[in-house]
Image 1 (cartoon, one colour):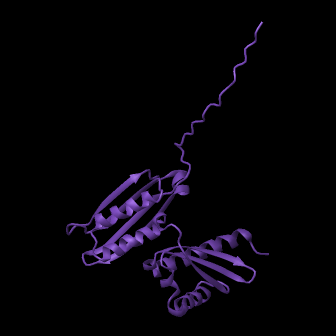
Image 2 (image 1 turned 180 degrees about the vertical axis):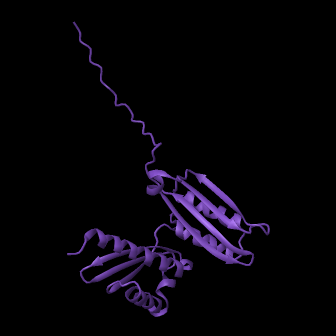
Image 3 (image 1 turned 60 degrees about the vertical axis):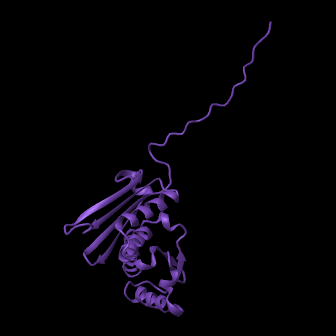
Length: 208
């Protein structure tokens, strides 16, 4: 008899491993995440990305390579891969971090890259955002620059439920740069107070 608890732990570990593999290989494609769903006929793998074409490849060759790796390296039975374009890229921390890293690679100033991303995130409806870029920004010594808007929760239940976090790295001529993005997604926060409007009451007076 299969130990159910152990089975789900193993499946969780496998999904994390697949996620890390895809993230390292396709970050330039704006990789945003993966769902691995077991079905009676095999395994459905849904990959989310900003630029699906880079993952599919010419005539689907890249997709076939991924399918082989998932089957032989990760032991996923009969993987059926679907690549889906991420719906709201400005609310996905992985996509934003990768886009900032690519902008730095193209020579865009780090403050400009971070400010544009921050503005787009808040315009998309986020409750808050924090972007940290670290590396040899303006001198030989490493330092970091932080931009923040709105509310960003760093601990507690709200950070787990509402905050999406991602880190990207890019190698430039001065050295390695790190980009950390935290996005507080829309949702009910602990400090949210709803004021209920009082319904009008009809006053009845007795005569006589």
